[in-house]
Length: 176
Image (cartoon, rainbow, N blue to C red):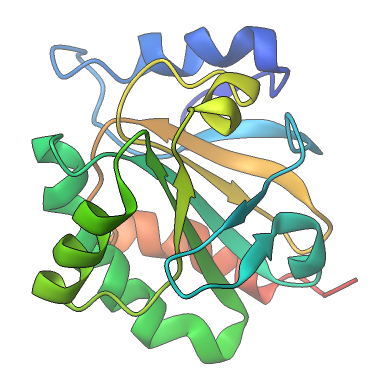
């Protein structure tokens, strides 16, 4: 965590600008001044349930905006699955928000790759607009108090030791 950027939605483009592949700094999570989520997030999931970020307060939540046609999005998902498998019992949740794709295509995609975490559907990209998503994938880590604490625009290896250490720090903080 080398840089701090404001969490205000209007500042989301600063996150993107820090994460270009040609950047001299190493790709990874960027510290965000802890503030509430840019916008409420409540969407239907492929599992038939409505998933609401506000209900998950008390847990650490990885909110990931992605699309199946995006190679970096698909590439990072197996490491997200491993992260969720390893730390779900420690209070980690993942909300993977698919951007604009048809439900049937998402069902086929998830069946092929066997992801266990919830896949949320944002067919009109309303949540992506509200969260000011400018690059795919974009991820946010929300702490147990519901504040965005870490963010990254671009694919991440969620099993990379430094990334895991940052998430572990959030998991080890007291709950609400």
